[in-house]
Image (cartoon, rainbow, N blue to C red):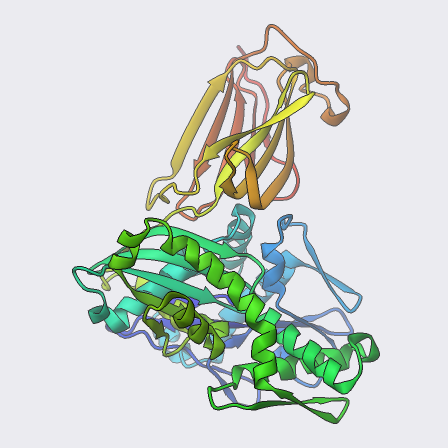
Length: 512
């Protein structure tokens, strides 16, 4: 069984390969009701037990935790990140693994795929992350799927997967002259856009841009604010349960909007509130404009030549179903906008196509985020940024990308402030969306190898430093691994950039 799993902010969608077709899996709750997705919801029961998916939506007591995927997009997200909701604290990794374990069990026992899995167990699973995801987000997503028992064979960027689904359905819109599409992917918590060149079933991502915290949840909050204002109250005037219920109403109302809708009906403490839909569209316009401005950077990449090669803009992701989104895209760019027939399922279907060994689709993708390190200079009095991997670097498809640097330092302690960045300014400094990984300290001076608190050691100049090697490995999932080694005695420290702080595996010195 070959499956694609789109772990979303508000819903998780699964599709599978079935002789050239890629149907979406439905799930059943304890009452036998069917869902075309697995709700991305957790609930913490009074006894501390966690329930997930449909089981988290029943009427039993508990604190619901929604949109916990958004915590992955925080610049400081790590394996130690804690999510807090109404005074309840849960480790993010526990939420992720628990949720995906529940999904795995539901696929086997309570889904339209259950009977098929019994005869044809999961063989390969392809998962997705936002194109703009940090190495930490990629690491934790992959780690959670693997801990939950999914046989993950690949991890794709979400708009790249949606691009597969687009050409599978609408291959004729891509011609010999117009070979490129822009995939506009607005989900519940993140926004991504990718410029993709399509040659038959071979896709090459030319560039990807995105905003880590922009999506349907922000539209929901906008509608909640409008409703509270119309009711003459504020969020502080509602109980936590009433506010959570209002947010859920807003989400459902938003997802039900069609071009003919004139008013949005909500209830606040059993009091009806009516919001003119035009007021809602006006309020969310700045959010949509933020995404459109990002898309404009893709179109400006090569000027008129890019426009001549563009077959259109493909709109995917649950939040992109909001009628104002394609309308604003058409107004801004004057290009044909293709709407996904199943916007919440397009990524999952594309992932299932990627998982299918007989589909014939291939992908060349890019990192979309650069990686580098801030280094000490002048005995620690200055810090400079050293870019190591460009954001335009092509992701390896099989073997990992490896970069090695060797040098003799001039300081006794190496301070490495690793960071990912979306772009560099004219002086080579990271600007915009930057995600730091904390500080890694490496004892250059062998006499400091037993020191447990290197932060307290003054940075001083040394003249007989050993030969140091920095080796950076970028795997096909875009996850960065760092080895720092004293070549002369074999002392090494290793780090997966995505784990917490500056902790890493350590190899003791070898005999010389």
